[in-house]
Length: 235
Image (cartoon, rainbow, N blue to C red):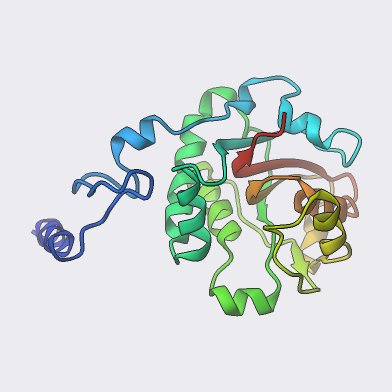
């Protein structure tokens, strides 16, 4: 009975304020969550996790030691699927990101990408940016992975310096913009000898992930893997 009432209220809400797919703009059916079935089926998956020494892993070679890396789908500025990232980050829809990364865990199950990971963590936001936005979208993404995989989520890094937006900066400017920005929290001591998955929303130049992974290297015998919801074409 309770479920029926919730379904009725949901349907009534959709009639007044229809939920729409962020990719195509079509009104979502009652059994569709965040994206319509068609757009979800056409998600431009990278499938990096299925490739040995994939493009994303090559991108970090010689910069910082990592075990493996992948992204769920390709990002192209101005393309329809880019609206997913924009909504998650700027339109107060981090729950959509949490739902997508939980799907990613199930979609990638055959690759065993998440096997052997001891903890999941997120690229942090400085407190000033967190106060402005109200949430850290990368934390929601990391928690979606934790939800679906059972791997514990832990906050390991802290952003100690505010930095300006990275959106319109080149690779060198991005690197200079975030140097010295991340330090380890006291919780990091429990990760000595562990394998940690570092999560962010998108990789473009890889500067943020490189600096964060470099900070994590201070943990004794740490192993680091990387996951982003989306990736710009790195090749």
